[in-house]
Image (cartoon, rainbow, N blue to C red; front, side):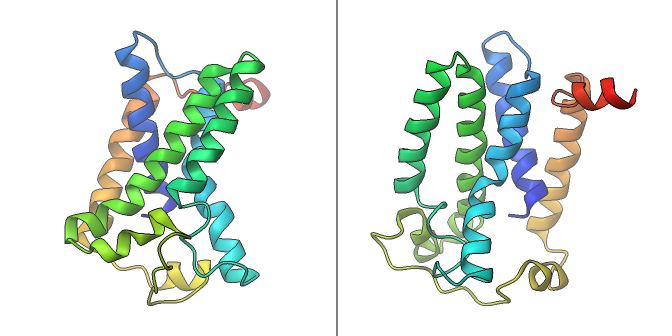
Length: 176
């Protein structure tokens, strides 16, 4: 899934969870959520593609084993500093990133391609294609899954605007 797809899925999940509890997405929560939706790629892709420290762009930070440990730490620290909602929003974003990356292989029945979720217990998945950000963007094709991501972005954008564009208050105050 592309970065914008992760952000859209994460925001829709976060907004739905907030609404179920009778609230709306908060400023800080939305920023934490946005960071959480990108965090696995911000760790794994540079460490694999630029520094060759990981086997591929979906390994360490994409593993539910590692993610689970991180989530416990984030939620514990957030609770201690009185920012539970911010910690929870980060975890929601991160969890939906992993779910988003697992969606396409799961739908295709490619169970072996889900091994990244259990790295390093399971061996790394061998991916075809370029090992760089630019290479991936240049190789982007308009597939049904990419169209689905764009549709999710449109829905998330409408939802975000209806929610009052949370996460942008500082920018609006600075430039508005």
